[in-house]
Image (cartoon, rainbow, N blue to C red; front, side, top):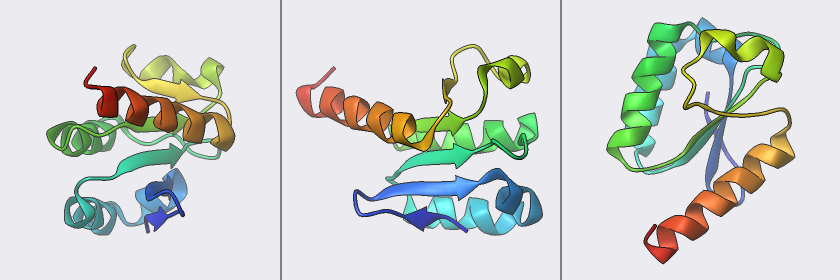
Length: 104
């Protein structure tokens, strides 16, 4: 399931998402306005599930970041936010939040 860290960033492992896609999507809809990191280092999420998550995140004008090796990202849309580590994903979201706060 989606875990919230101290900065209210949702973190979800792709393994868990693949096992319980309906529960994860339901939880994401319930949480609504969160920025989300999906850890895809061990498993790539199916493109249809990725699109569903992307739509939910976009509706709430939030940020979605994937942790994945860039060499494995060929199946994802070019405009996906892809970083190789959790620290970089958290930094990316911090910058996105600053831009939102500034009105960009």
